[in-house]
Amino acid sequence: MPIIDAADFKRILSELLNNACKYTAPCGKIVLEARCDLTASAAINSDGQMIMLIVSNEAEIPDEFIPNLFQPFYRAPEVDRWQQGGNGLGLTLVEKLAERLSGKVQISSKAGWTQFTLQLPIETNLPVALAPN
Image 1 (cartoon, helix red, strand yellow):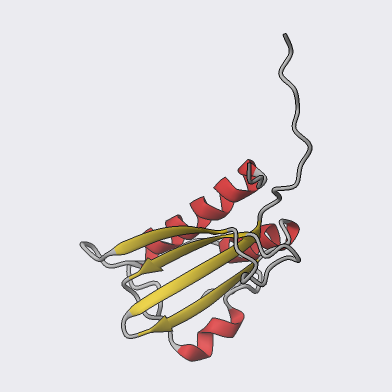
Image 2 (cartoon, rainbow, N blue to C red):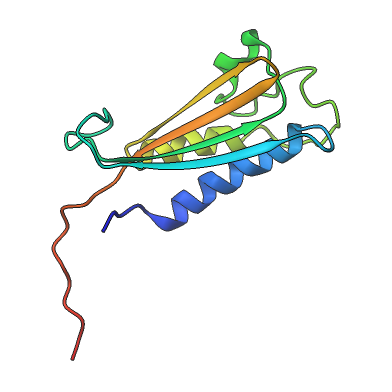
């Protein structure tokens, strides 16, 4: 059974989806995709077992702002068209939680879409706990 810290994973997912909602125009699209790769081809850990979460939304971030998005309190100018506000800590938290889970998060933005890809290793070689009689 794959294991990932549920509270951290939930917080990461919540932050990514909140950002997608915040920066997507009304009636714009948001796509959530989850993949589990149990093959040796994955590069996250020595066993190659990982879960990948992809949150995409219809909004493009200019290339010059992307390198700073994980910096604390950074707010990309001209990106928050709907003045949703915030303190600029959500993506910093996502990155720190991903690192705490031995994973990584990446951003790409092109052709009117922004995509956050979270890769987390999953632990599958745990001893089996016996249920009490």
